[in-house]
Amino acid sequence: MVITVASGKGGTGKTTIAVNLALTMTDTQLLDCDVEEPNAHIFIKPEITETETVTIRVPRVNEEKCTSCGRCKEVCAYNAIAVLPDHTLVFPELCHGCGACSYFCPSGAIVEVEREIGRVEIGNLKRLSFVQGILNIGESLSPPVIRAVKRHINHTKTAIIDAPPGTSCPVIASINGSDYCILVTEPTPFGLNDFILSVEVLKRLGIPFGAVINRCDIGNDKTARFCRKEGIPILMEIPFIREVALAYSQGVPIVDAFPEFRNKFDGLYSSLKKFKARKS
Image 1 (cartoon, rainbow, N blue to C red):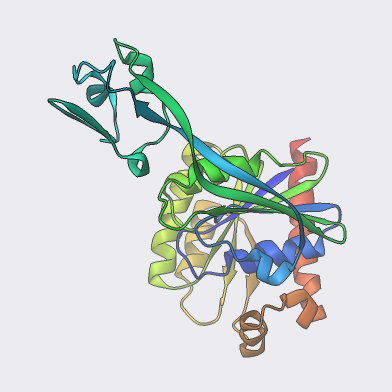
Image 2: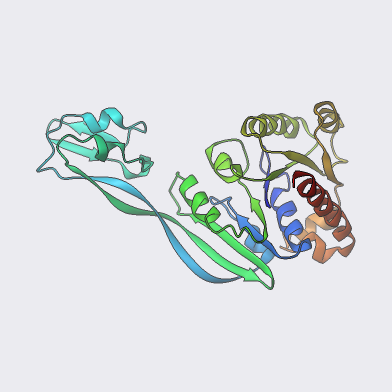
């Protein structure tokens, strides 16, 4: 079973839920797909045993063959190529590696070369398998790194994906193909607004989901009311506790600092197992 933990906005506690759920479950794999700023490792502290480079294929122009016809520029949807009268410029940072320019070049002047954009790190903490992606500084194209992380999903285990926040392309790349999604939110106007956006995305993708309301006692009840109105199961509610926030700031998982919270995450795990049983 592949479970993605997502949120419409940052700072709602998405990584907290993913990490503590992974530590509560047995025979689990945790994949950090928030590749622009992965931080699950701060709490897991895994032993990294393997590193892989992530590359995309970008165009290289052979000026001797190039006729400056402009066909490559026409088919590039990302403005990564500019054609001048006597020279063709390639902007690798804008390229998405789709290959259209080399495919449609009538003179065969374009070849594709590998360009490194990030890496995948693989490790473990006891029986917990861990994979994270890291996008190189200055790069903007994170989905290829996310897909590289997801290629390591072990379908013999329960895989938990920590997705990036928001509803943009990196989130879609992380969520797509999941069996279930946990949406983490907070009971504030901004939290509810972005939660609704995430709900619409998941409905369009056809992925079942439920909500976890973090810091449930600091805002209003509009988020809970929205969930009841839309038939969205509230899987867990976590009150604001200063000591929990302090443990988080020190990189200590909740279930390690406060063993009584393990019951809450056990309950969340039980809800997911019931969903899996109904699906089978």
